[in-house]
Each structure stands twice: as C-alpha cells, then as structure tokens.
Length: 334
Image (tube, rainbow, N blue to C red; front, side, top):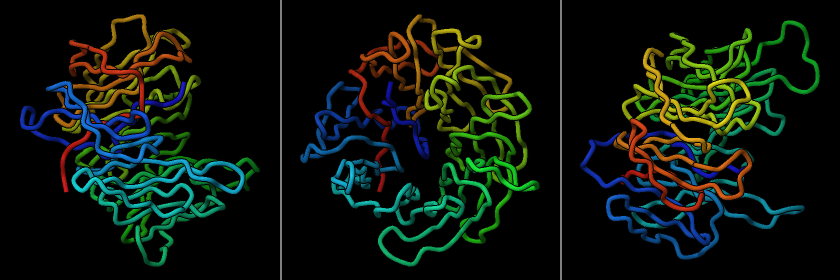
C-alpha cells in the first residue's frame, strides 16, 4: 500500500472555531479544498497534472508533477500558493527540501555526505553540514533556523572509530551541529513551537517513538511501536498543534493486527488508544485546531481500497471522507 495521507511538515495552530477545518486533496490530477463544515470541495487548480501533495506552511502546499526524464519519468515539486493559486517550481535538485517560508532549500550532495543550503530562486549554495556517513533525510524547523539531519551507515564498511549513525541538529546560520541521538533514526518531525523533535529510533534493543529538545537535551523514550518491519511511513509521529501530544501507529503486540492509532503526551505519561476496530488505521495527522485527526483506514495490510477518514481527537465520531488520495490539512496564510 502506498502512502496516501500526508503528515504535516510544520503543523500550525489556530483557535478552535475561528476557521473551518479544510483538507487539500487530489482528484483527477487537480487540487481541491474540502470544507468539513459544509462538506463541499472547491477546485483550485485547472491543469490536471499533479500526482502528490504535502502541507508546507500557512497558505502554501507542495505539489508534484511527473515529467519526462532521460530514462524514466521524474518527480518535480512545486510550491502552490492558496491565495494566488499560482505555483513556483522547486529547483531541480535531487532530494531538495524547501524551508517553511519557501525562501531556501536544503539538500545533500550526490555522494550523500554533505548538506547544502541555497536560495530557492538564486544564489550560491553554502555547505552547512558534513558527515563521514550518509545523509538519510533532512527536516527544517518551523522558523527555518535549524535542520534535523538523519545519518546512516553506508553499505561499505566504515573505518573503526567513525562517527555513529543517528540524529544531528544543525544551526543553518552558524553551521554548528550536535548529536541528539545515536542509533537508527527515521522520520524526525519538529513540534509546531519548534522546541521539540519527535522521531522513530532504535538503540540498545529499544525501538519506538522518542522526543528530544531543539538543543539536543532532554532525550526521552515515549512508546514502543510494533510495525517498523511492515512499512515505516505508517508509524511517523504527528504532533498536535499545541506541541503537547503525539499521534502514531502501533499494534498491541509484535506482528499482531490491526494497526491502531495511539496518542501520547510529550512527557510519556498519558497514553490512549483511539482505534476500536478490526480495520487498519494509519497515518494520523492533526487538524490545525487540534480538534480532529485525519487518517487512512483499510481492510488489511496491502489493501487495494484504502479510504480517508476523520475523527475527533478522542477517537469518537469517526466518519469516511473519500477514497484514499494524497491529502493534507491546510491553514490560510500569506
């Protein structure tokens, strides 16, 4: 099963009741905005060419197209403004990640052991981070000041005493880097207030959801997950807009089904299971108000007919929205 619901890259908060909850989704290659209050969808693009989308920042979405390549179609990302409804292309740089304000991109070099930052439209790239290992992923903090960089061991053996894989926190301005976690790391996600990182990590036989402060201190193990071997994107943690809770996916026991949505407080003390169903529930993401959670529901692992559902933050009131499609919560902005 492919990934359908896109988690919030930099979740944002709004006061409950001040704005209708809206979801951007793809249908027939175009972007639509679904108003959950009225149940109506508004089409905001006309060219029927988009293949994926993700929430970038208030008023902006990332949308992708498939364009001809030398040997196979290539994915090209664009920033879509919800106000002007115009797109601007992300530079054709492999694995480029735009900053929340769309002014910069960060990307690894072809060898995968250095990270560069440059202006979205122009300017020379600046080397910001270097490692003797391989860069697995890059994630911008909400204010665009820091990068969370996951590094992993290359296929070829590395010399004795080489740095260990894990999570590095990099200051884009000073280029200072510190190790926040040593071990296998995937899917780091910044909290909306930019003060915390949640990620999937494994070390010393303990694997699951961890959190750490932006300064690399306060590392805390929150909860085990039991689906890492079945598809890592199912378990990517999602922050609530107030940065106090996380939602993620797990099973009650190793290799037991179905997948369930779990919420846990940032301090790890309050843990709740939201899914009382025999169907799989995966890929949770919080609405901007924090009142609702969007998720994918399917009959089984590898199902051909997954669906997008929404429920209240306490797990009640679950209802079907549509057949699964790339989708993300949106919040108006500049």
